[in-house]
Image 1 (cartoon, protein in one colour):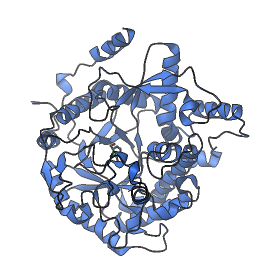
Image 2 (image 1 turned 90 degrees about the vertical axis):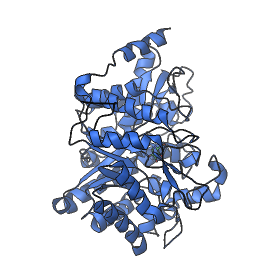
Image 3 (image 1 turned 120 degrees about the vertical axis):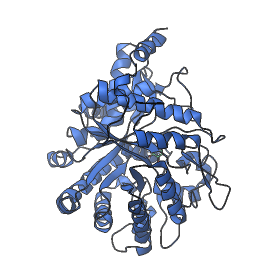
Image 4 (image 1 turned 180 degrees about the vertical axis):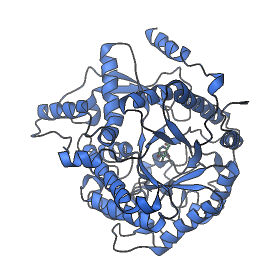
Length: 490
Ligand code: NOJ
């Protein structure tokens, strides 16, 4: 009962105001994809295997439908069709990623694969020809397998290799690309890849591997930022930023324990990466808790690596915007029966997450539609990080693709965008752009092709990978043109 009341209060505070229903003229709209999820051509023209090629080929049972990104949307060959769709949508920009293994097949800077470079040049040129700004992600999860064999992101040397790869990309494409993002969702990379055996490289090393990975990723990100800043920004005049993911956390009850653990969890889930970049160093609560648990577990020092003062300074301030990916909200409660002997990221927090069955469902059972959660989250980010400029780099909803008339997706976008507008106008949150995930249905990692996030349907049974607009295309086209998420603004 108390739970219901709590949500009712939050919901009743959320009234969309007529006066503020349009996004500003200079607000940017776009859509996103990533290399492994769409390109296919996994071994063509000199490309080498990434950790996702390796995982899907060696352990196909790891993927829900046993499939892989060998062909995916075939965008390596069909990029012109993709650009036609982007044109039809009327986007300002297109967020896509570069496959490291297409440019540097050995993973190292010693051999450049010019066919791979040509592919991205062609795509970028095609975008520019159509007045679409490229927003390029350097790392969207497809690490060269050669580098994984050296320990991947748990090996600090990766900072060097990433820096060299990033510098090369700025050199090769920076005359045409003015929006760069470094690492996509580092928390997911580390927790799901090195902590729990979900995403590639699928290691089980929770409470240790994930923290090592995060430490390297933060340094690698900062390195790429400084390289851009010191060597390229003056001439190329672009922006560079990190993409962090946050699913908002809401206390499950009004108990002090739940309220406190929720705040702690926000710092572990988001502050882990946001604090070093915006405030300097890991969140204090994270440093203290991991140190305390580690000591109890018999470790000679904290499992969370320590930054030197020099590193803290070097990482602080290394993002031009906060790239933000968000999909849903969760309820958080403190876990009383937590076993302090067990080493693990979740145990370090001592929490559990769930969702409210009353929230509207999507095809992903855990991913409910919670627009008012997005608004609360934006306010929290504003207050915690001194009003950063936020650029939504992903937001979207999955269905199972049974109908091209995707009304729930339209509703999802409409409600999310209304919440973003309210945040901007009523809570004074600075938001300058919004990216829908995704341009088209694609390979959704461990869910394979079961979950569909696309505005365009892709027929994965046809060799042509035929693309067909869903109803959401018309909604988005109108939104991108009018900047108005509701029926009418005037
Ligand atoms: C975040 C990731 O960046 C993207 O690759 C993924 O497909 C979407 N979320 C949807 O899960």
